[in-house]
Length: 409
Image (cartoon, one colour):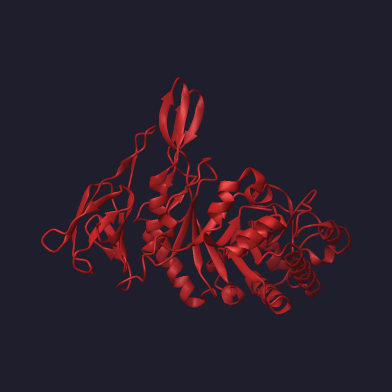
């Protein structure tokens, strides 16, 4: 077992620790803890988590500020209103513009030296005030801008790529606050070197998601189940992860790229007219295996389900990956590690795999999901996987499994 690499939590957990003691204790087992929005831990909670080895990040929307009252929690504050009312020349437009969330927003003009300097001052001061380790820059890059904003930028600054200006801002922050850890969301998408001054980057919904899953009408309510991205085809797991790998070869972050997925509840049908919701453990394993095929860490959040996983999966020490990458088999894809194996189904048909693994004599395989042992047969291990069926829609989805190399006591 090892410390977990990355965890995602509701900002309310950190802002209201007295109501979430168990969650705080569990988060203390991870190296990097990211919250879903604005909300700052008090000094006691922050000190507790950092004493356990956690690195904490303040939330900041990279591209601008939404219209209306702003949070008083750092890194936001009075400076937001001052920027709009007194320094509109540092914004792309003095009037609010559309955003992908649907809420009107003011967008930063990152070509402005005064703006870049002001943002660096405010972010560095907020980090000093809170004692946090770094800043999380949500939606870092042109990919997250609506078409109207992209067009306005190109009209005002022809020949200056938006992401080049963002990269210059992050480089300035690095120079102003060298101890600040910089965590971006999906900056790997850019063809500009945004990641040159970034410690961690994030990819979202590459394996599972709260969106796009099958819907079922239950008692007049539309219920959506977890989406499991298929292995092949357009925007399949293979295409998405390989494209991401190629992007990282151009400009990797200083540290890691983490994968964040989401799950809906695992519904069990209605009992006494009440829909039964449970943890979608299949989604958690599927997310973990998809990232592990390429040697990455993932976290599958239950933010949309009300159920968070608290099991051992994220603390398993698989050791170093063996071989150059995922091994595609008939109906599955596999990656062997020093201390285990991850397998992901590539279709909905049952699959059986006979594999010869690098294990020491007398070692067996432990199926972490099923809590069962697999013994070597004729010098090989025999793995069986079958698609899982959703209770409400009745549709099936592929599964992922983790097997640990261990000596059975």
